[in-house]
Length: 182
Image (cartoon, rainbow, N blue to C red; front, side, top):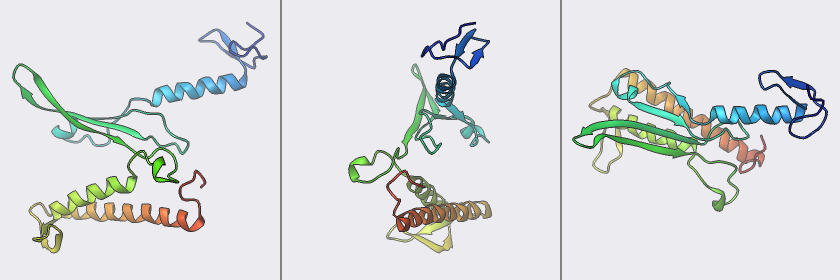
């Protein structure tokens, strides 16, 4: 067994048997962090899988978690109609969330959680309510696919958006919005 770290030549404190190598604590932490980074890349999410369409859709995480522990890049890809002599036609979207604080317009680089939730709320309202002539929703008239389950999902999505917005307002009031401060 070596008496020095394989990477920095400092005195080792840990021997990694599977590698038959020795590393100091600092280098071992760096190696463990990098392994975690690599394991988190292209992680597949399966929470949505329940039926044929959802089974055909793959959601992958394509970046490393940021300082707060959340990822920023997601790919949602599925295969649709089979085109003769070509094969299945893929469909999907790449989602990029904001990575880092937004202190100026130039630091904006992705969408917010609030924006994505708002899109799903709009879609659920489309199922739950009829539209007025101006395109807004008439909440007094049930939509074609109105049901208890859609109503519950819509209520919880609206609540989720309210809590996300409350968090932002609270951060603004404390003067920490646009920073990495908690």
